[in-house]
Length: 150
Image 1 (tube, rainbow, N blue to C red):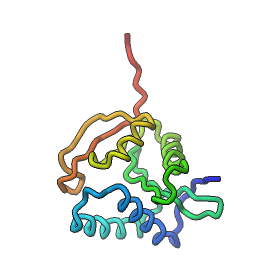
Image 2 (cartoon, helix red, strand yellow):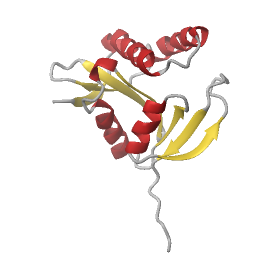
Image 3 (cartoon, helix red, strand yellow):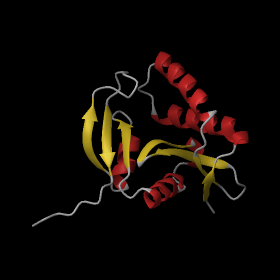
Image 4 (cartoon, one colour):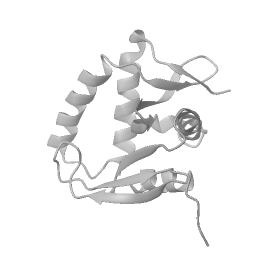
């Protein structure tokens, strides 16, 4: 049975390994140089920032997410745990906290784009570059509850 909880300081290396495994499986569009630079940023950030983790029965992290003021800044699932409902559990928790959740996704990461669209997110915009100015276009998606007027 999957559970969700806040990360512990002792789990930083596991969280970073989940990030690495997930990126290796889904971000083949990154240059080797950019991959190394992003990894340095990730190690620095997640070494100091608690995140929500989805765990298995043995309380081992399988995936994690970082929420900031209604925006999903990061969601990564260990490649070996894909298809087990980890991402869905994390998104469900995020939506319980922030029903009008938004997320930015690398346009080239079609697996993630498909996942968020399957979860009911809609594209609300696009940027030519990522948040650090790198040439990786972002799709801006949102889960706002929209009322259609006839």
